[in-house]
Length: 450
Ligand code: SAM
Ligand code: SF4
Ligand code: F3S
Figure 1 (cartoon, rainbow, N blue to C red):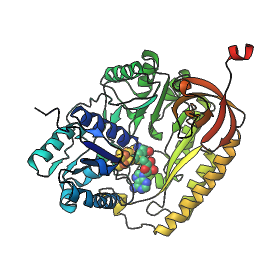
Figure 2 (cartoon, protein in one colour):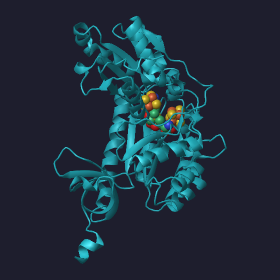
Figure 3 (cartoon, rainbow, N blue to C red):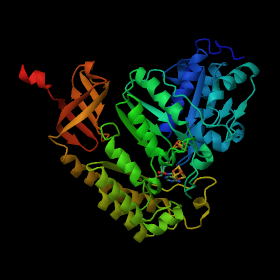
Figure 4 (spheres, rainbow, N blue to C red):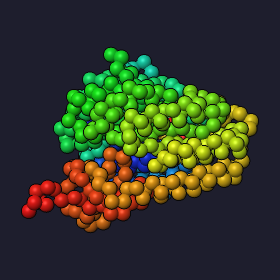
């Protein structure tokens, strides 16, 4: 039986790397630790428990863990009760090797071991011995009620975990395990509980949300329909959708429930060249990807698209990179997330001989980023003077300024008092920058009449 006063009011500090799943996992870790009386603190020097929630998707992740833990050496020397642990994708990848390589660490826990965290911490404190728990729980059904301490207006909700796609560049199938979906009725209950706590918007999370499959056989489009119809949630977002699984049914349901399902779609292309896409094992060609873009734009006019791109994939020629550049030019995304290819452990592409030099990858990346800056600047001009429905989420650090988002995921700042937080109001855009808009709340019809 776990001691409910394990933490005795001591501080816990978590530093989070990586994607929204890790952000969500950190929130779960803090909720679980608060239940056994740890208190979240904003700075590591006030903590008796420090956790690094790690990411392994790109560039020297193990090195980052070494250097952050190294910064805590002095704290550990001053405070004998300080325990330091690593969770997340690097922990899953390296397991007990991390404990051997970084003597300052007390425990390591994998991506399927988050719910065991309080027990693991208890064992680390009580036995004084190093602890590791990093086995995948592939046989267990995936059931996970969303845990958020102060939910606010917008909350992440996991709908599935893991990935079975095995893109040849990507470590995620090895760090998050096999794909598993949550039960549909559990999800609906979860979202109802969140709306009862004042939540207005959910972002449904998964590595490949559109391969969601409920036990009853419902797919992702049908899940969206059920959430739109059977809960009071005002806005639904999701990430990430895989182009190969984006179908007409999903477009139709997004269009039908457009008042709830946000018109922003992140559709990672990774490359604009069909041969590279084949070597990446993405399951679509350039032409098929462009057909999906056309299908989405025809079905949901005005929808905003963003993407992920990798440059310098092994063997990528100048002409193949040029195809990625023209894809960006042709699609005119609102936003791109472009990365230099980074060889990852266990992955096929990391073993291929024709790796590109870092300077060449950087040159290609710079070309894409420059092009995208021009496109985004140009697109932003269209937002000037427009009126958007904005859901207001929070105060900013500037007094009297409130921040919200349009359904197209653009951040909007207005001058107002905090009473508008949680409301969706029409806002006229006074000045548009790429991804950030400044506006004024439009007066309501009754205010105009008066
Ligand atoms: N599931 C998502 C999909 O299929 O598009 C992607 C998830 S991954 C965590 C986020 C992004 O990281 C990918 O879209 C890809 O652009 C980038 N990425 C993944 N592995 C990479 C690697 N080895 N080198 C560079 N970027 C990588
Ligand atoms: Fe990685 Fe591909 Fe799975 Fe996305 S779909 S998480 S890129 S293996
Ligand atoms: Fe990183 Fe793991 Fe997310 S590798 S991007 S934290 S799934």
